Length: 225
Image (cartoon, rainbow, N blue to C red; front, side, top):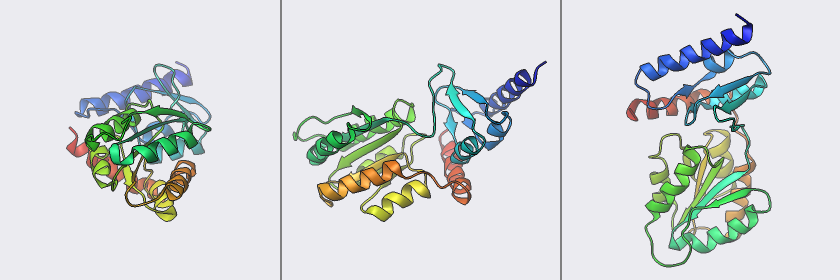
């Protein structure tokens, strides 16, 4: 048996053990990453949860993470899902225009100022991120609070309500947030643009933060069964 075949069998055995323990989604942690030769490629099942520490380890060891459908789940991406309720519609349209110059944008609605319910659109954005169709998500309502609550109910999502530069940096660097929520009634367009740009460009810090975010994911795994 070649070294590559041995690695594949080892990784497959780890995933089978996790699935056998009742996890609804396979969990890729640093143990799985470390089983792969440096500079190699790891095929992961669609919908698998890759912990922040595993992401950091993959970057350090130059390991590419690829789904079984050969779609890359790199640490950087170019697709952003964006949504809003009626109160955030105008800000969504402004941000969408800014983002389209650099990213592929999935517009999850709403498409007018007619009154709608923010949970519907927050869920749509969160699901795009959770299922891997979007790298990051941005959701806007009047205060950003309710949408943050909704998005955080979706497994695999870590949503953060940001209101200034510092909170945008912190949510990414410390918490590896993958959905940003904004309150259109609390901040103006110029600040929203700065927050979104900062949030999208700030990398996760890893290190001690990776261990802490892994504990957040462990809580999700515990209660998500």
